[in-house]
Amino acid sequence: MRTSRTMQTACLAIIALMTGQVIAQESHKERLPWGPHDQIGAMNYLTPETVLSASKLVTKGKVYSLGMTVDNKTPAFRHRYFQIETMQPEPRTFGENKFTYVDDQLIGWTGVGSQINGLAHYGNDNVHYNGHKVSDFLTISGVKELGLEKVPPMVARGVMLDMKAHFGKEIIPEGTVFTVADIEEVAKKQGVAIRKGDVVLFRTGWARLMGVDNKRYLAGGPGVGVGAARYLAEKGVVAIGADNWSFEAVPHEDDKLAFPVNQLLATEYGVHVLENILCDELAEDDVYEFMFVLGHAKFRGTTQMQINPVAIR
Image 1 (tube, rainbow, N blue to C red):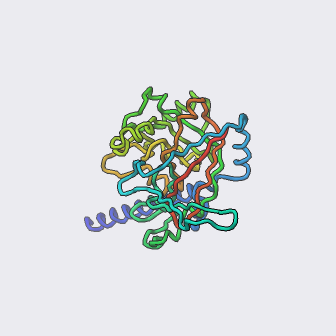
Image 2 (image 1 turned 135 degrees about the horizontal axis):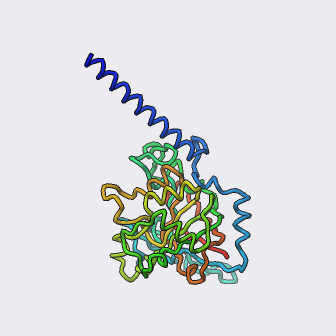
Image 3 (image 1 turned 30 degrees about the vertical axis):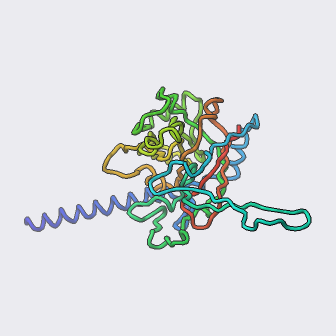
């Protein structure tokens, strides 16, 4: 009798586990309705209708550059570096008009300065968005799946949330976690609503440390928590960014985890992350809603790319 009950308990446990897995899988499918071969995730929310809607936000014609200037002194994550070698490959003149030219060679990593992180960049135990495995897609000359060349231009309604003003700090301390309550309070105060197809940017003041205290800049930062990230992803945003390198809070909410927010957004929702996006000029003009435009370089097989997105009001 005891053995029978033990087996019955074990069977029930297995059934419960399998049921839970099925529910989780179904929930995951509901969040990712674009099929097993999709490569662009939440970018699917952008349509001609959302672009036209965003264009109606342009009333003054003022353009804001949201990308930072990059050079060989730009602080970067761990192993990354960046430099340009400029030369005259042919230091002579051509033709009667004495034509000359100068060329550049880039040496370094694409994840330095303002950047877009693709869905091939973050994974969960080497499994990335839509079940793509690193062992299947990684080559020395670029990824075969989820490369940024597949991602279309990002033209959307942009929303900037001024967390610096919300917390009343010139530079929000490292490890500060932005919650759902924080996001809702700031959005309400600024008179904006977050909608499907939006790009949401966070101003933290952290960019002010770059070039001033690079050691502190790279050691941590404030940012979105796991709950807030899921909240935004469930709303259907296409990208989320901030004016720091980490985008999420470092140190993390749970010190047993490593970059859980970036991982969650990429692997579960297909949401792109934007880092080192400058928001101060928008805040100075009280611009919280705008047309966001990003056309990144389409280098085949890249997982990240330096960018200079613009906001147009």
